[in-house]
Length: 209
DNA sequence: TGTCCGATTGGT
DNA sequence: CCAATCGGACAG
Image 1 (cartoon, rainbow, N blue to C red):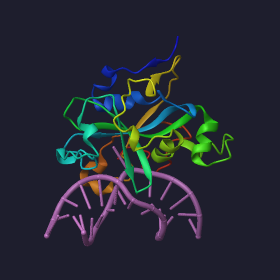
Image 2 (image 1 turned 180 degrees about the vertical axis):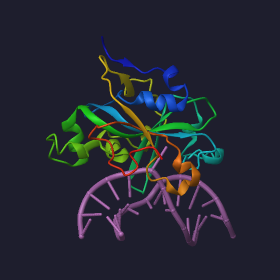
Image 3 (image 1 turned 30 degrees about the vertical axis):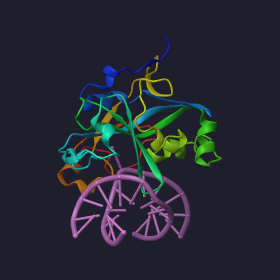
């Protein structure tokens, strides 16, 4: 059976459920350079106007984050620190700022293309770790930038698919990383990881709060 | 227009 | 631990 592209209905559900179920799916980007695929192993949910860590905090809509407020199943990609990008999946209902940040993937296809884009040479099992083990690293490896923000994830170029047969794995919830500025929101267990996967960010908070 | 800062990364 | 590097958010 061929991998099934995730549907609009998949993304329209509860954001925490979508976040968990995105683990193990395949992120696919097709471009002129070729096709790259990675298995999602680490995500974080950013939910609603009360989440002080989220760009949607206080329902403040700007040109940058407006896609977060739109319908589910679209990419929200923003620039950070002047030089990096982060990929989010818009989830939930229209007019509610909800999204899932893709924090790490494990390369499945197109490792050479990823290495070229990342400027890395060592694609041995050990060297390949650094290709996609961070939110902005995977954006570089997958050639994702601001021009793709708003892209339809139900389209043909950038999408998630459910691999068949899918593997089984253990999921763990933890605090989100680097959102200490968000007060009480920083303690929410809204980060989800595939336990034991080598591409997951090593972190002292790889446990419940 | 001016100031402040980040859902990160890579090197010391 | 710390600097890089600049678009975005917001105050004035």
